[in-house]
Image (cartoon, rainbow, N blue to C red; front, side):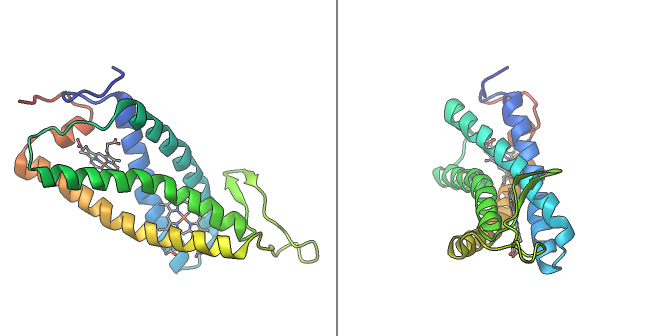
Length: 189
Ligand code: HEM
Ligand code: HEM
């Protein structure tokens, strides 16, 4: 089944949602951990999985443009729809802004962008001191760093709100919202 309907979501929607969700939550946690502890051994993995998120998130945005947003499973007040929809927008845009700002921050700082073994963008090494890198554009790099940090914390708040919403639908309203995102066909009135 290719298109999302109110009763059932497509496999594309479901697989993109859960793969991006898992990677985003892990990258937010690893990003904060490695920055707080200056654990540079994790930077390569953080960047590589971040590049994967960029590819998946671009696919997701095209899918949403082609397919529209899913219709709500239940009948709710206008403000509830508006809040859920606004949070979905922040989440989907955040999955683009995070990897793009990450790539700009690292490459403009003179660092490399690896995809596991291979360098997509090499580090700008100083010929006199090959272990040091020379920034490519300090201002742009610092601007991207601030965006990466601010949007990261904004996303954590929005993801918590999003999960609280999903649990409210499941536990309090007892509607099919969560089950539909888990791939089940649901009844809607
Ligand atoms: C345990 C974590 C999560 C749960 C339980 C969850 C649950 C859900 C559910 C039930 C929906 C369907 C809403 C509806 O039918 O209107 C949904 C949609 C959505 N979720 Fe999540 N979600 C989680 C994590 C995330 C994360 C981490 C992101 C992104 C950073 C995210 C982004 C979205 C977006 C953009 C939608 C809109 C539909 C779509 O584009 O696929 N979710 N989520
Ligand atoms: C795609 C999802 C991504 C998420 C959710 C994410 C999240 C985060 C978070 C929360 C931090 C900690 C920010 C702070 O407290 O200062 C961080 C740091 C960092 N991220 Fe990402 N990131 C992503 C992708 C990327 C990508 C693609 C790159 C580079 C190619 C990247 C490079 C970095 C670097 C270098 C730091 C450390 C900055 C510092 O040392 O001050 N990130 N990330």
